[in-house]
Image 1 (cartoon, rainbow, N blue to C red):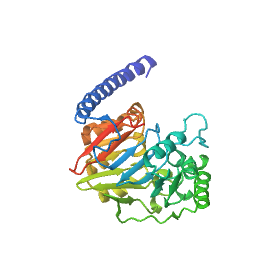
Image 2: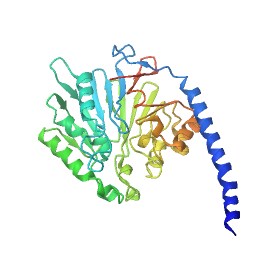
Image 3: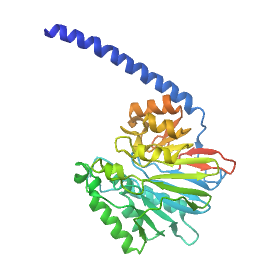
Length: 332
């Protein structure tokens, strides 16, 4: 086959493919805008007009820091990107100051103490636990207990060994020990009460079948329930890591999904969304960084609106006493 004919065949294949991708992208944008109009997001006023049972999704760019609040009690799920990432010291901005300031502003009592009933590190990637050092060592923040499953190098991929995960984890455990904070490694898998919420952890024990699939396979998912409304915080749970298949049926139908792995490849697969059936989704990232296939799945499969913490400067999901979820933004 001569080069001219090969180029012509390649053109016949590539041009229709690019046209199809363009059409799908436009369709996704149109449907995304249509679905998002279902949800009226207003600026957060911090007047508790929607009640005090809330999930705060902080704006820490493409990292997770989620504060759970109920009846004056607070818990922190992950801490956001820290300032000294051993993997990328200059590429990503750290959010230690912003996360600490938000905790102090939101959780501080009359004595000047911000008390967290518990903290949870869902897994040991720095964009999830990197700011815990600054939080734990802050003199005005008190932590009652800490849930950390551990850092099992048997679960690492070849890339994880390069990213200082074990060193970061060990530093956090040392910080907790220095502050005499009890560390719970054997995470409970039974639901427990937290204010008006019921909380349940998923993937609390590493599956040997997932060994070598990467640190994301250690991700602990968190189910938060009040009345008839349910949220699932999917940490970095993905289909390739194998965790979606492990937890989907156990989690069941939900109303709000914190999209796994910041909307990157392998998160929120069609199969996963068909089981969970979320009505609202929140992604801890820039909207523009969410992978096209993830957007497609959310729009075409789940048919749900989704909102990015970065573009909204943080989002609060309030669970009202009338069994509604109300979203507000601009929470800083």
